[in-house]
Image 1 (cartoon, rainbow, N blue to C red):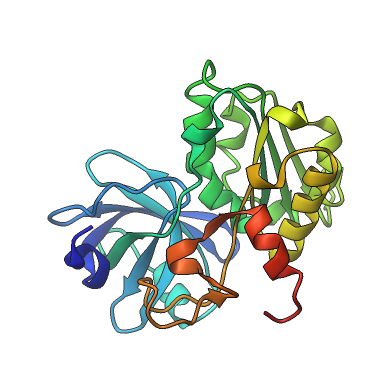
Image 2 (image 1 turned 180 degrees about the vertical axis):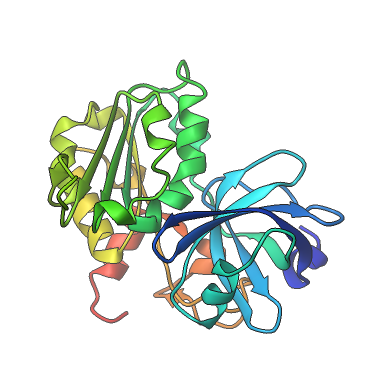
Length: 272
């Protein structure tokens, strides 16, 4: 990776903007000039809203010719600015940063992919890659949990994933919801997988990650084959400022994707 790829924002133009859910937008971006190096599913970019600042956002789609998509929830000044971006607007991107899901290491395994809320966005490139090679992997199960039906992202794409099982559950339904309600871990009983030959990928709120990872391990999935994506306050994205430190890990460099046997001892320490 060149220093320019790490340190200087590269201009990308918004070519499409889609409202996924209230306060959540997906931006499709194309490079104005030279594209950043190729991203891997699970990696992130520092996305810069000129005049406001930058935030880390995982890629939610990786296209050709440098095209990238980012799904962003409006939670602060910078994310507000990004969610308000319209087609034609230029943003700045730095990256790619961090570790990816490392899907090729799961060849021959059943895959259990568990998403909570907007955690489905960083998992979407992984799901697309897995279902595109059905002969490479065993059963692929996708389990999705969200607060309400309105908060579900990728609504149009989910039914098109040719998986062994895809389930969606919500915390609170509405008059039009006739699906599952409750914790996403309840869907594990419906997933098809042999624990001793399974690799799991988990992304979402930290309590959901802990509960899901522990449930998978209790069912016999080795902790070293449960991969989780963690979130901390990332500022520099180069491992220098220390804002994203979690124990001995700097998540912008050593994460965001780590094995559960690495993460579990750290997440068990309150306020670490």
